[in-house]
Length: 173
Image (cartoon, rainbow, N blue to C red):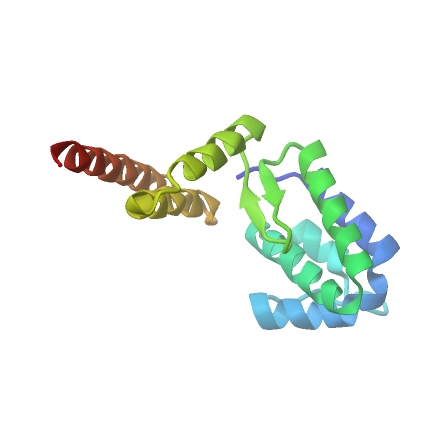
């Protein structure tokens, strides 16, 4: 997975400018849900320092946690955070996307995402449920940190095998 000190610094800059008033609540949530300590600065928790020094997986999890916490405070503030993070990810070409709930997901490019979505739609018939399940499992494995590429390949091959067996079975009828 890609990382970028520039992306990390951008998160910190946005945080200082827009979210610093919530640092206590955010630090408590990060410690409780992710299990990491947030550094304490001169007079408050230093979330921007966390963004610069923490493991990438903790930063990505923090993005989601911050969104969820802000959603309970203000939808407007939460959506601005989400929009900024999404734009920064795209501009820094990190290979991630955010869903509507602030979840961070692996994202290769637009064509890759279109192909994934179209494939799932084409397999919408209930007889392909097992194919869809293993197909989606392969993407979940790509989304894990670190990505389980070997598991993803196994799952995608399994989905092709199930699809082939389903088609052969239907042709025998």
